[in-house]
Image 1 (cartoon, rainbow over the protein chains, first blue to last red):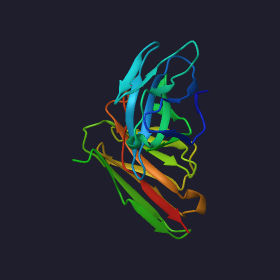
Image 2: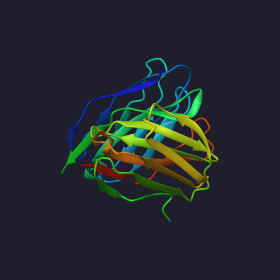
Image 3: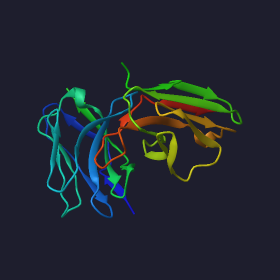
Image 4: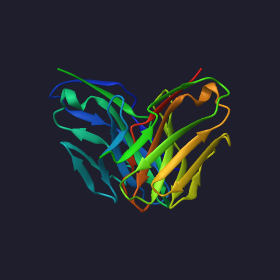
Length: 113
Length: 114
């Protein structure tokens, strides 16, 4: 079956620190991969995505590379800001039913000034 | 301006009541979804409609009934509410439901069953 595993949070960093949030997946076939961000009290927003192996998604200084050999899609940012504090969700879309998304459990990021 | 909107934003009710949550999208998308997010932030799909037709129906109690009067609206009706129904319910939409498409989420409805 399909599933997404993310590192447990919370992750607490100082401003300007380097961020990595690990995400690995299990899927039959070739899923599309996504990172969504949820700010307090809001819905999920797409942060970035990659639709095939070796693609790199990037947005707002965040990036993630679709690694088929390690079934991973780790999220990275070189220098985090306080405004990046949020919950980050890794997700995949079912390769045979594109409407069906599987989300990881979310990783809460706290960035301190 | 709001792409995907939900009403109400908060819903507090007693066990056994029946309630509805409404969702509307103005993006012109063909596919809409309902998700449930539990207290641990775990997000799970419940239903999906494409052009008013049900295409995903996960293992959800039949007390939950989605209704899509047109492709811009997907409402969720819940009968005989239980304590375990307390959660945040998110509506989402996507263009055609094709590979790699982004799903756009509403702000959520926070349901508390007492």
